[in-house]
Image (cartoon, rainbow, N blue to C red; front, side, top):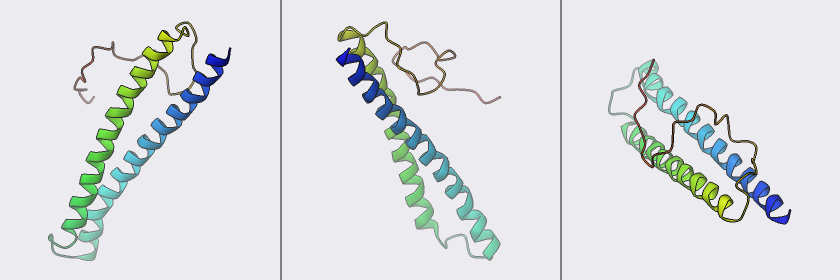
Length: 113
């Protein structure tokens, strides 16, 4: 029972972190879109603020990398859960897994609708 409680606590931390990263990526997307709009609205030259745009894009790329790493950590923790005898225990949270793509260890391109 203690392992299950510890696993649930850890899963909640993981789900909260995953949600925070996704929220941050969404907010960064808003910022990325707002920056050129602000420049256009103010009637400024294209080079004005380009370094800031570059830095935000670098940060977004870093967040995407962090997200990939969290996904890998999530999968590793799922394996660890099995190793400690909690294979049949469902830890709630983190979204609907019913539509997940089968795990192959590789990312696949998703075509937009």
